[in-house]
Length: 126
Image (cartoon, rainbow, N blue to C red; front, side, top):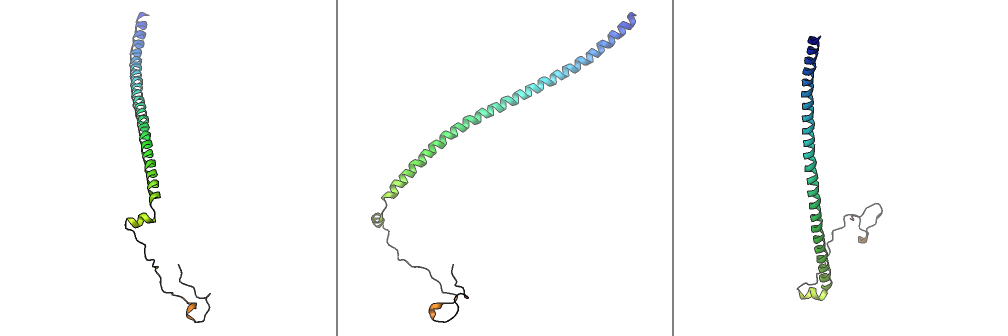
């Protein structure tokens, strides 16, 4: 009976060794996965914080630029109100001779005295 009991004990111990190795392997895989996910979490959290800080600084710069544009618009409006005809003459501007570009009439012209149906001949207008 003791020979059978010792044989069973040996088999149980060999099975425990195999199961113990599988458990260690499973624990190592679990710990490495946890460490990997923890590093990814730290990386993503750090990049989010960095992006938030960068966005806030860019918003401040955009506000400063917006204020500068507003000041330039006010300067432009105040300067444009000072410009009038006498100022233009004083800096050398002159009145222009108005000339219009014309072209010859390509269709029926009722002003030249010929008879015809005006509705049937279209005028060359733009």
